[in-house]
Image (cartoon, rainbow, N blue to C red; front, side):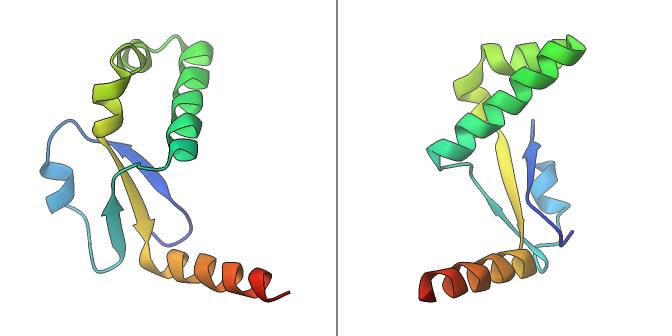
Length: 90
């Protein structure tokens, strides 16, 4: 994975041991804007699909949020940082 950020719902810790941490960093979803964005996409999914799983995740949002992992490719982060630095120079 190198082209974007993924948000993965993890019920158990087996996900962490299956990731190539030489290519990605695993983070908690800590920023409020990301949390709001993530919830809205799950709500949207539930609205369109009537997904029982999405409904369950939304009903227990505080617990659910703590079970999400943000998967950030190391190279992608470097590109974002470079772009951020360029825009702050102008």
